[in-house]
Image 1 (cartoon, rainbow, N blue to C red):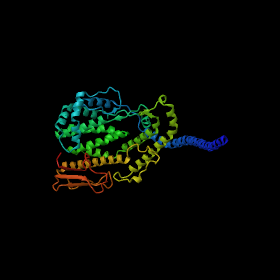
Image 2: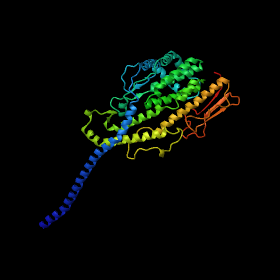
Image 3: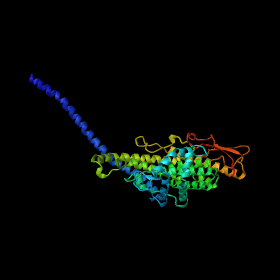
Image 4: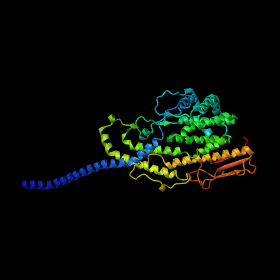
Length: 454
């Protein structure tokens, strides 16, 4: 009986031992295959990533060489001091900057905060007269605004520090982001001051405020960086609103509006933004809390993991960069009013889970085109005003008044009254791109006015 029991036990243990051997065999080869795959991935992945990255680095170096690092000039420092009396924030501020630049007093900040909403509202609507509180603010600070006008007209164009672009693109430690909100606020004040002086019949202060605005906006429009380009675009909108409120027909402003239709720096800024997105993804494994890890604080495990993850991040960054550069070429080489089907544009590879970083180039292009159309319509308004000021009425027709140099098929509808006393000009609904619609807060695509001898 005992022998049978021992025999049965030995017989039953053989299948279990066989299963364990099979499991060990599978696990053994699984480990060998996995390690081999990881080794191949690290070697081949880094090699492929290195080769693909070379074209990116060459293009980056060529672009960076065009824009040397600059320091904040004396004109910018002086302007920062002058704006403090208006109660507005620093014009160009580096986040976490610990400088001793003049800070607006608490009383002046409170004074500006009380008219802040009135400032935006006045620019956004068609009313010709600012609110009483805004008029009082402009009156109280008339000398401060005059000092800013004088400084901007007689000094060099203010320019703020431009960081090491190579380091900015690669997100090296110590690179801080900047905000341009204060500059935007000051430019809005200059436009409102110009329209208010026009209302009061003060021609020279009106012209000087517009000139000061223009010189200040040159700093933004000539910048290679994307954020100041966006602010420049917004400020052009404020300029258009102001010029439509002011009965001005100066050929100088007509030429300036035309010269601003094509802004090559906007495309350049999108290229830099593309490189920044590339740097953000490429160096993601090295970043902690928004800054580059110091070697001493990097754990042994994270350094080991980086060996295996870096090829993926590099390949993802290159894939995104190549996709966006191709789309830049497609979008900005065609009629800006033409709707480009999504299937025409390049898409990031399906394996690239980080490809959603960065805004849509099509959306940025449409915003720029919309602002160009606003400026073109305003230039036509100024041109019609000029003729009306010379002959006393709006002409029955005018050469090329209904054509567009922005978009091939875009047209404007010009409708003067029979006596030439009133006119309306608007963007024609025919051949208008689907995205060109009027939304709340947008600059109107139609304008009406009476003739006025200037």
